[in-house]
Length: 152
Image (cartoon, rainbow, N blue to C red):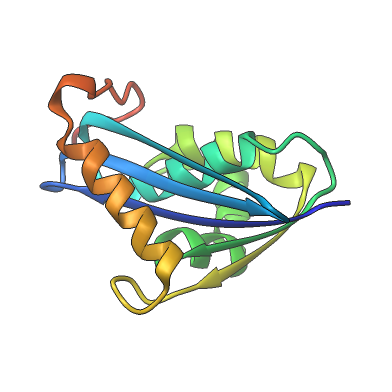
């Protein structure tokens, strides 16, 4: 089974505001970069959306996947098991339920390990993801609607 390395980052200009995600997928000699921007969203939504989109790109179920992210929100929710408790409570009082349910549909298909990296540090691929996310958020002509975003 292939070993997949994923770097992902999210960014928003204002919280809420325009935002985007950036992804770098690596597997052997293959590299793929993805990004998208949204008119009105939050940083946490973009961090989580990047992880969802990255996992959805994988062709083979049962892949060994390591996801590098600077998002404590995403990493802690999964590694500390919070999201599984939120499911039992039907995400009552939790934000981004739509994206967490999307994540939970794809997550069990692979062997996923999360690694936290410090944002804006010396992690080349994480910095590349940040560049992709910021560029996507700034590309006003291509911004999409984040249909799941619900203002408070």
